[in-house]
Length: 195
Ligand code: IMP
Image 1 (spheres, helix red, strand yellow):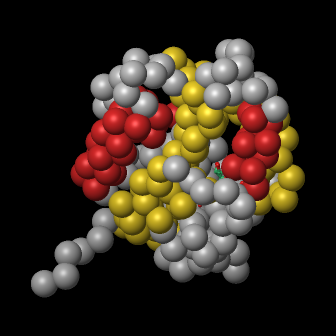
Image 2 (spheres, protein in one colour; image 1 turned 45 degrees about the vertical axis):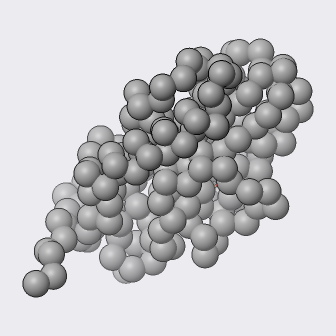
Image 3 (tube, helix red, strand yellow; image 1 turned 180 degrees about the vertical axis):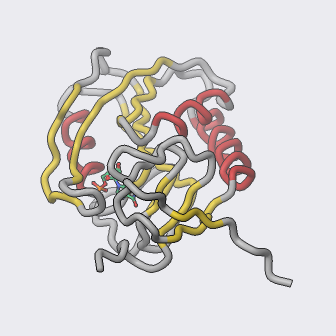
């Protein structure tokens, strides 16, 4: 018998109120995969002390879970950028809202993203961080949308490749709401229905 998916109906006052979201990735699936990624990263950076840079706001839960499972020493910093214009569509330009404070010259940098959607933020970050002369820059993302992501360099660590649907929870928002959901929910098909 097919397992019944958990659903979530958006309450009044939320964008797209009344629409039903379904769970795409459970807490258990996320936790298992985060542990695997942490093991891979720990082994790749054995003997090094990378600076792990979280991309605010969406990566905060993923980053917290990831670093708690690392077995190497590391430092953390954060950068805040914005690329989303309206609630669920990319504005097409990236703005820097808060820069890192660490000096990354000669350091191994690991950038932690919540999701790679168009890939615009990723390319912006790569260019910006590489200008500061680090030893290396690697990217880890919780979610990746292969159908629409465009970038001309590889992403080092991807937790989950997903279909092109707008997702919320586990740090990801809908107009700043729903970031605290412990699992990841998706709008049923493609973009949310504006009708
Ligand atoms: P980009 O289009 O790859 O530049 O995505 C930039 C940012 O948009 C991500 O880091 C997220 O914060 C946000 N974003 C993209 N897709 C989604 C989604 O499906 N749900 C929630 N936020 C998203």
